[in-house]
Length: 291
Ligand code: GLA
Image 1 (spheres, rainbow, N blue to C red):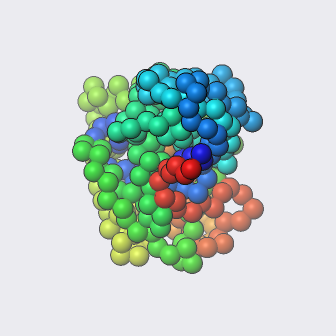
Image 2 (cartoon, rainbow, N blue to C red; image 1 turned 60 degrees about the vertical axis):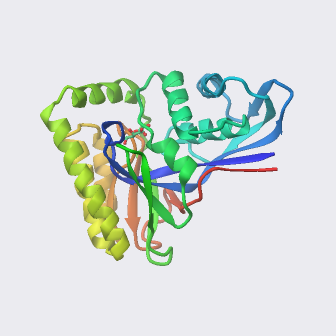
C-alpha cells in the first residue's frame, strides 16, 4: 500500500485559522510518502530522517487513531523539514491514512500535532493536506471549515516560489502560543491584523478568479506588513527577503508564509522571474491511498 500526503504553502491568511477566520493555502506537489503493509497489529515505521520529534508525531497520531490494525512500512519526504511547508501536517496525515483513520482526518491530525508539540496550532495545514485540489488554492472559512477551491492562474502565467530565509523557526512554539493568547485577550493590534487579513484573503481570492495577479501580489505585500507590524511575527531576515524578492523584475508580491518567526517566504511571480533559489511549487490534489 502507498500513501501520499502533500505539504502546503499558504498564499495569504496567516494567524487567522485559530481565530475562526479565512485562509488560502495551496496543497503542493512536495510531501510525505509511506509505503508498506497494513495489518499485523503493530505500528513500525522507518525513515531516513527519523528523530525524536518525528517519532513523537507518529506516536501522537497512533494515540489519536486509537484501535488500529497496525502498519509496517517506510516513510520518505520531499519536503524541506521545518521550513514552513507543513512537513509535520503532511507526516501526520500520511500516518493517519496509513493506519486507516476514518472520519475527520484533518481534525484528528490537528489534535495529534497539538499533542506532539504542545503548540495550540489551528487546522489550516491539515485541511490543505487532506483536501487539496490540483490547479487550485483552497479558500477555507475556519468558522465552519467550509472549503471553496479557487482556481490558480495557468502555470504558464504565474509561478509560486518558496524561498527559505535561512532562519530556523526556533522560537516559534512559545511565541505562537503567546500571540494566540494575546489575540484571545483582545489585544487591539492583534485583533486588527485578523480583521484586515480576512479582508485581504477575500480580495485575494477575487483577484485570482479575475486573473488579476498584480492586485494579488500587492495584497501579499500588505499581508506581510500586517504580520510584521500588527501581529509581530516577522523577523529582520524575513523582511529583508520579502524586500529583495519584491525588487526582482516579474515578482508580483511576496510575504512570510505560515507561523513566521523565521522559515519561508512565498512569492507570486512571472514564470522564471526567480531562479537559483527556493522551490517552485505546483498545486496538488489532497492526500491519497492506493493498493
Ligand atoms: C502554523 C499553524 C497553522 C497556522 C499558521 C499561521 O502553520 O500550524 O495552524 O496558524 O501557523 O497561519
